[in-house]
Structure formats: structure tokens, C-alpha cells
Image (cartoon, rainbow, N blue to C red; front, side, top):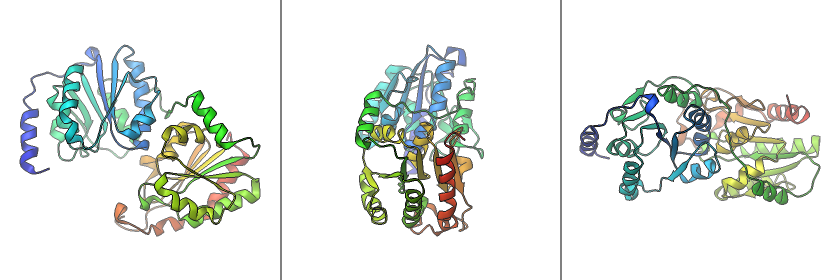
Amino acid sequence: MSSWKNSLIRRFALLRSSTPSCAEEIQRILVVSTTAMGDTLWATPSLANLRRHFPKAFITVLTSPVGQQTLKYNPHIDRLILLKEPMLLHLFSLLKIFRQEKFDAALILHASQRLILPLCSLSGIPRIIGTKGINKGLDDMLTDPLEAQFEHEVERRFRILDRLNVPRVVRNLSYHVQPSEQSAARQYIGETDKPLIAIHPGSKEPFRRWPASCFATVGRALQEKFGCEIFLTGTPSEKKLLQKIQESLPQARIVSSPSIRFLGAFLEQMNLVLSNDTGPFHLACALNRPTIGLYVSTDPRLCGPYHAPHAIAISRSETCTPCIKRRCRDPFCFLQISPDEVIDACSKMLRHPGS
């Protein structure tokens, strides 16, 4: 968006006449979380704490299609509003909804869309609380700006709620599987007494991926040690990657489903989940499954397992300075993590699932 458009939006936004509400007057709350699955799951402890502190408040969440499926059946939410893309085409309908809702506060937990803050501001929301530096140059639209810190993403969201004096009671991620979804997942798996292992070798961004050959090596070793049944999970767009690994693991079953609801119910049945740093890893953590995540190009101190007693991150430092992240197509830094190390970690979890 051009600089003159940014300037114009700011001028209109700063004309709002409402004054910030104090915490005691908060009755209608907008939570903005419009990104991916992991980011959405990191919001669930905040939603639980928000409900505990404001039991009578009407809590609305503006979210993405992925977030809508992730937060479906969450008992702490009164209304989910789907953010459709391109946002510009739906801006005025959203503006109408926001003005009708008369929100007392907007909590910007995570939003990738530039128009989110102008939308909240033009809606006349008295308090717009968020973190500075991640709003595409529109920090001045925050009524309550927070300085960025080195902290886990869940903690960053907690600090946003601190502005409403919300205590940090609930800390674990949550995801709510329905009985019908559990039944469908069990039927798909079938009757078996073998340990069930899900391997999730993909990610939206290639720079987060451990080599496919390493996942295959781990799968073969676990089959030999434990006689387990292995499932290769991924999106339909990752099917070629899954098939490549299956060539070395012919007994593994591919689970390529676009449905987050099915994936959640499926992972809930697993005895172990092995994954890169991506949404399904955090989904398995939210389901309290024994889970191992592989981290090199991302930092588990910022985005690793959080208050997940059965999850661990195997991590190494980046080898390139600076790491080029999304521009990297050959993340050789992941070769620092050996298959033997991952096999040992998986074996310990399978032998001592409660530890």
C-alpha cells in the first residue's frame, strides 16, 4: 500500500472520538488471530484466561479459514467471524459488523493483513491493544502499544491481556475434538494393538524441513524396534513428499487430508507424533500427545512446545548468518540433527510415554 494511502488511513482513524474503556467496563471483546494453525493454537490459553476473567463478556474472534477450523467448538468463544480474502473486497461488510458489535476492546494477537488495524480503528473501538513492530508500519493505530520482547509467542499474547488485568492461570494449548470425529478417526485407523506413530515431514515453508531421507530412516528403525504402524501425514499439496518417503517405508500409510478437524482427531489416537516446526506439531501438543519437534531455522524458545509435558524440541543453532529463511531451498543446517538422535528420543517416548 502506498505511503499516501497509509497517511490517509491514519488521518481517518485518528478522528475517532471514543475514549478508552477501563477494564471494569469491558463487556464486548474482539480478539484478532488471523494467521496459521500454530499461531491460532498459541491464542487458546489467552482465550481461556479471558473467559475466566470476564465470564459474562461477549468474546468474538476474527480469524482465518484455518483458524476457524482450529477454534471450532472452543467453549470460550461466543462468536467466530471469518476473515475472507482478499480482505479489501469484504472490508465494508466487516466494518458494518464491527460497528454493530460496539466492541469495548480489540486484542490484536496476530494479524498478517495490513487493513486489520485501520478496520478496528475506523470501527470506533476505544482500546486497540497489540505489540509494536509487527503491524506493517501502523503501530500508531494501537491505543495500547506494547514493546516487543524476546519471549515465547504464548507469553507475548499474555502480555497483551495484561493490559486488561487478566491473570495467567491457564497456560496449556487446547483443541476440542468431538466424539463423532474420534469415531471417524478410529474407523480410519482400524483395529490394531500396534503402537501408532504419525510422521509429519512437511511444512508450508521448505526452510523448516528435516530431510525426507532422515524421516524414512527413523521410520524404518522404529518399525524394526517396536513393530509400530506408521502414518505419513500432510496436506494434499505435500503428497509427492509423502510418497517419496513411502518408497522407503512401504508399510507406512499416507494420510493426506485437507481437513484440520480430521487431522486433530487422528493425531489424538497416536502414541507418538514426529514433526517439523509446523502447525500439526502444535496441534499434537495441544492434544497432549507424546510429540517431538525438530528445530534449526526457528527458535523453540520463541515458538517451541509450551507447557506441554509430553513434548520436546530437538534443536540446533542456525549455520548461516543471517538465516535467509523463506528464500532458502536447501536447509542443510538440519543435517546437524542425526537420525540416530531422533530414533533415541522416539524410543524413550515409546518406552516411557508418561515421562
